[in-house]
Image (cartoon, helix red, strand yellow):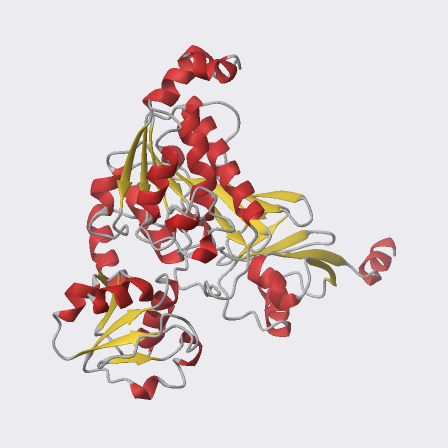
Length: 89
Length: 345
């Protein structure tokens, strides 16, 4: 019964945006409800929402950059960062 | 050694550390905001040999952040003006200037003369070239880059550690062009200083370096974050790959070389209001922002010689054209200002 209660609770992750991505989203970070544990599916939604598909970025979970070619599960209160390359000097 | 006594006093430096500094050879690629912040400290600290590489001229809009130049530098080569400004800082440091742009043809020869490379460029294209050359030559490079109030710093290829390609494998990343991005001198100054500081630790072999770590500094909100990444063993760069790959990637020629091509057109991808305006036979001005929609004004049977102000937009233009079945493409080394001067001669 206890487990059942837990799964009914909403889960959230923090998503941080940098560089051009922060400009496109208009924010430095936000708290987003975790509706899909698969990182690729989760990101797809964000990329669609903010029209980020054309940008080449890397993704970190809890300060470790992950390989998006492999499946990765995110969990409640993970911190995800979207890191585009910078080019100014 | 009297001049270095305050740094020698630090236990991490000492006489031995100072000797390491004096014996080191460092190349700074790019004399923009980052390079201008980095160079005086390297020279004052006593780095034995410092190479400075940049093909650009000083523009008036550089002066707000490129603090080693002055008003009389405008219109002159950055490396010449940097040398003038820095040569009296330390007679014990040898400064060598490279006035030509770093290309796939000269990079290995130049990089071979140095122990550590500092990437202070503003070009993503060049960053991959620097990365690959450092991998081939087994040299570390300290990367810094800025986007508005944020900066990234990392040390790549340190003792066979992760490289820029491990962090950003996709070379076709979309970056906003140079004309649009604003920046404060203090931001690039801070990021350059972090790069210089990383260099000192690398030379002294002290402290924690940024190999496998991407430092992100948001100076507007005083926030620093470190993101860890590991080596991608599937990414290999060797010498043969290096030359063939880069021949496709970078195809720069000088304006004078470009003139010798028969059946060619010069494509200016600056905005229509940018100066100097170049009006001439065989020159066409299509801003980068309009290139896709006006692509039918160009003929893919003729050579297209692309230029802009600093070369950054030219690279993006080349990509767009290449994606639309244009292959006879060259990038002109010189910017519009220099081309305008060369035409007048």
